[in-house]
Amino acid sequence: MKYVDEYRNAELARKLVDEIHRITTRPWALMEVCGGQTHTLVKQGIDEALPAGVRMIHGPGCPVCVTPLEQIDKALAIAARPDVIFTSYGDMLRVPGSTTDLLSLKARGADVRIVYSPLDAVRIAAANPDREVVFFAIGFETTAPANAMAVAQAARLGLGNFTVLVSHVLVPPAMTAILESPTCQVQAFLAAGHVCAVMGWTEYEPIAERYHVPIVVTGFEPLDLLEGILMAIRQLEAGWAVVENQYARAVKREGNRAAQETVFRVFDVGERTWRGIGTIPASGYHLRSEFARFDAEARFDVGDIHTKEHPACIAGQILQGTKTPLDCTAYGVLCSPQKPLGAPMVSAEGVCSAYHAAGRGLAAPTAFPLYDLTRSLREAIK
Amino acid sequence: MCLGIPGKVVEIRDDGPLRMARVDFGGVRKEACLAYVPEVQLGDYVIVHVGFAISQLDEEEALKTIELLRAIDAEGVAMELGSMGGEPAAEGSAAPPSGAPPGAASGAA
Image (cartoon, rainbow over all chains, first blue to last red; front, top):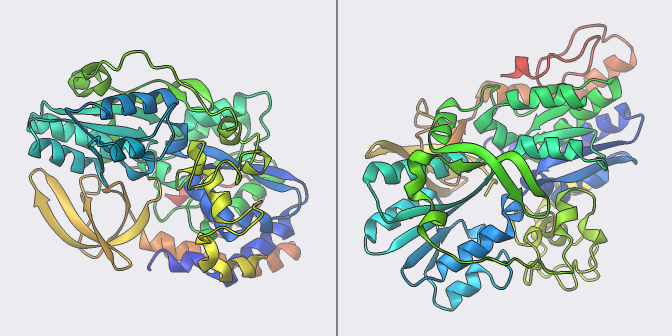
């Protein structure tokens, strides 16, 4: 596939690994922000091919993982109503709430439907005027343009039976929160390429300057990650801290202006709670007052929500990068992709699912070794 | 849902006010909304997230990245010889540090 295969070239990957080894003189700790990047790193064994002392800390960029338990419990309460068709991205269905998950609710008869695009939810609402259609609008800056367009489209069509349960979070405030933490170990960031494709990277420039931390906008293929790591280490070794763009084929400094315009027409910025992390000021989107009639939280009274996390799950510390799945006593024993205790084991972007799919720290090989296909590249960079 | 991948636009049509496309991802075809990439034409490559194209791929930049990666060995040798004085190899990609901080990301756009 064009723009994919050439960034998985084993020979070039080997060269990049060698170059990283050649220029590294000290230990460094880098954080890849996005869960998609975590999966590539773990899948290809890139983190294990780095020089001794160079550590990749996995960031909180898994939208499913940071959606707060309270919002999931609200989703479950709304989806259980007989008048509701509850629509969601597929990743959310198996995320554990306090007592159940959307998939179990669906098995018990609730009308829960997976949509590929939020426009599908709008179509379902238009086709079912006698039902309430609710869309679970979660994600980072990457899904915000799509979710915003769904609301704008519902407004244009005058749909009175469409609402969204919004749980949108933003990357730069989370990076700032990580840097402000007294236990912060992160010395450089690989910023999430697709978040920057939407928002550009100007928001990261003051962060790089204020905290003196290199930030490299990085793509998702193996060579992208290796080049992003190389660029970040070059800066660290030289004592620099600026924003650089590794992912120039997809990201412009100003981002996607048309997408930003729709996002800011529908949403404004406000405080959000992140699962496992806590409340961060100005870290997410809320519907603007002009679109308040599309707010599912206002439409449906869900009563008191009392959240309860599984006591064995350390997802919060894993999301903050202070622990890895290998530090968790439940990992691979009580918790697996088939029976997840926490969101990072569910999502295709979760750290725990990445480790599990690669068979890391497991007594027996995984039943479905998802990552065997990529062995040639892994062998090349070992 | 953040796992956007590049695909080729193989069909474009209007669906009311929204410009829609069929996008081919290595043989798998999916629908995508082009509202945020109004300049995209048939045959262009786009990155699609949850049914929306959020970025058009820049072929020139893509080639530049690969060329820079291929040149790494040569750069390494030049660095060892101490001949990298002040000339960055290129902006925005795998250019090694020269005498001054890299031109941030500004040159890469």
